[in-house]
Length: 106
Image 1 (cartoon, helix red, strand yellow):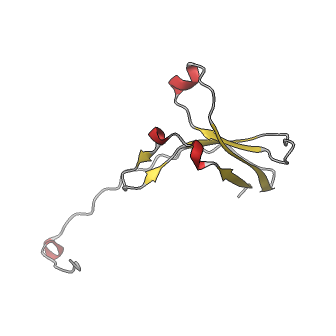
Image 2: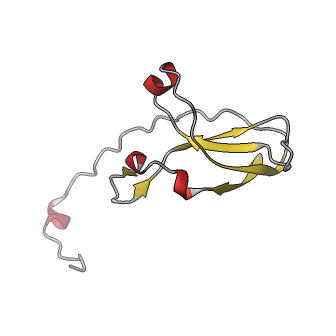
């Protein structure tokens, strides 16, 4: 772990049209967190704002700030996260022994 951030989010500023329903049925909201090199007058150096699409950024839309906070701990080593592609799992073959099994609780 290389940093801990403490944020306060003003949920009233969250645009309701940007809530996303996940495949699992849960509701999500995407936002971006910015860590600044300098603190403001309140000792804060972290900002959270509504995530924007590429089109919104290119159109020059202003950021909607939804919260702020501060870094409360760091080891001084924050790295850029890279996506790791997962290999698709190959389903196990069904044998004749297990195909008719009624071990399920339903």
